Length: 89
Image (cartoon, rainbow, N blue to C red):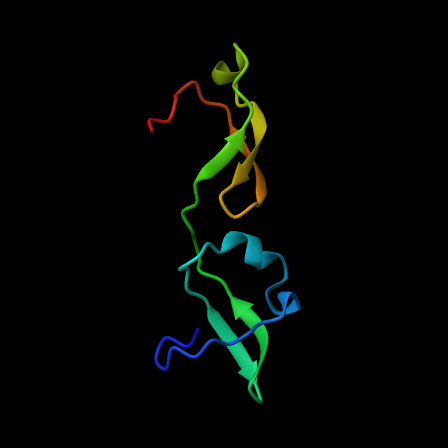
């Protein structure tokens, strides 16, 4: 969306590549346009996303730098360090 005119600008997935999985709703990014057509997306330098799904830590993994798969709120899959802390609701 153009933040000045609030015009919705459709962007094909190819213009952002894999970057779309790092943008959550309400995120801002710079879109490069050529003759009114989006040709590229410049993502923010960092984003804060919640982990929505992960496997529980196995006893002993929290003492090492073991990594486990996790799914972010955008659907992106990453590997994160095991932790024995529980998130509060």
